[in-house]
Amino acid sequence: MTHTHTATALRRAARTGLTAAAVLLAAAPVSAGDRSGGDYLYLMVTKGDSRSSDTRGTLLLCDPPQGHGRAAEACAQLDAADGDIGALPAADVLCPMLYAPVTVQARGQWNGRPVEYRQSFSNTCLMEARTGAVFALES
Image (cartoon, rainbow, N blue to C red; front, side):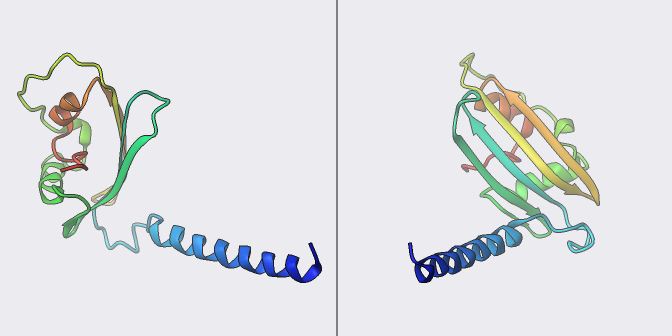
């Protein structure tokens, strides 16, 4: 490769890297001071075992509710539990005894406090029974 080709390749790589960095910065968590106390959670749902690559994710914003199809419902449920996903009331449903593991994760803030949650469930029915609309990313 000649010096000209090398310089051109380096400029192209730098532009690509800067573009990628700008996209990452735009999607990166904003500090609590910059969000004016807004409630938000980065949500991820992984179906399958640890070798699975079926992961979906979104940013749930609650002022105003947005991020997935049931954002308003999820924000209302979180508000009632003061942002504590583990304190959400369990739904009274019968779930099949089917093993189709799903792992959920949430990171963000609620009322200025950091939120971190990770839990695995035997199947989607049990996940929905315990977490309500919060991780209903496909709805």
